[in-house]
Image (cartoon, rainbow, N blue to C red; front, side, top):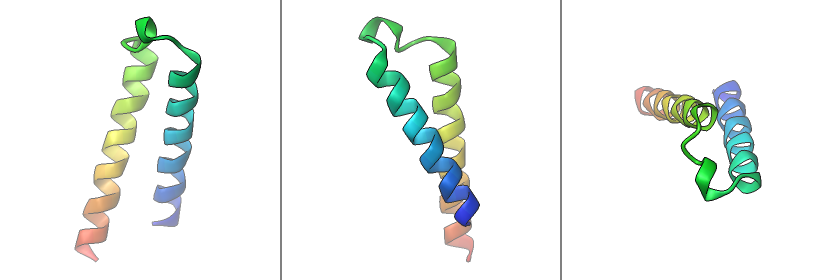
Length: 53
């Protein structure tokens, strides 16, 4: 669980850093979208594990 949480925090920081350095015109770029999807999937897995324990 700790590894999952670390992974989520790392992805959130990276996504925030990218969004903070790019303008609104670049929000729909593929790398940002891909990272956002990975982050969403990790968050879902994390909360499912919490609910199952």
